[in-house]
Length: 285
Image 1 (cartoon, one colour):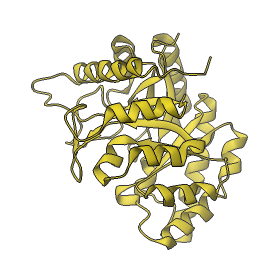
Image 2 (image 1 turned 135 degrees about the vertical axis):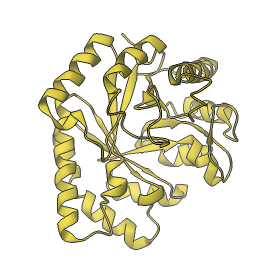
Image 3 (image 1 turned 45 degrees about the vertical axis):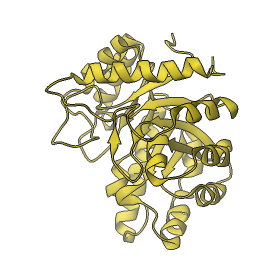
Image 4 (image 1 turned 180 degrees about the vertical axis):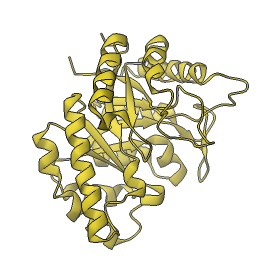
């Protein structure tokens, strides 16, 4: 049963202790505990991290345990964030490496389908940012080989980029409506983009949203302490009738002072306050 008016989830790893001072990584030793913690906090879902760490989604027994825990604690796995492809890239690599990466992407699509995960997000930011026209052209050509395969498994590939709004829209148009767009409001803030312009521009493709706060040209900070205009953000989501997911990807706080679970619970209340204020509701069953 949905706990909130719209699906509000937490990024995998945020409910667990930080690993090797990394902001985001799959919590290999703690992932099983996150379902119960997410339920206790009141989250509807977890967005699963898939990176270079060993991941249960690739193994039959792990996949079944994920399914069992999701059902037991009534916390769905709403999407997979494939940070893996920030290192094992889908452009600017040799033919052999590209084939291996595309083969792995196909396998991941099949595993998502087995868990009824409908969104597979591929980030093209930071180390995998599309810096040149050639980068973008290569990525489009390579992903076009996979899109129909993904759709045949009822999995929508969703792109996150740091491109300006018009360039992102041009990129999305290459795929028609076969793919989706992820929007990260914190990253937009840091880049100085106009969030209203962005959301209106990518509205036809908008599939899921990451909620974080950042300083302009700066780092991620706790929700409500940065330069993100959350009132404008949530009111715009309402105006464009957004009915997808909100995935909290907030900054970690000092774990010597505050448990990760308490930080996440505080962030959930922050988001719910804005969801209620702007009457943001889902159209899904």
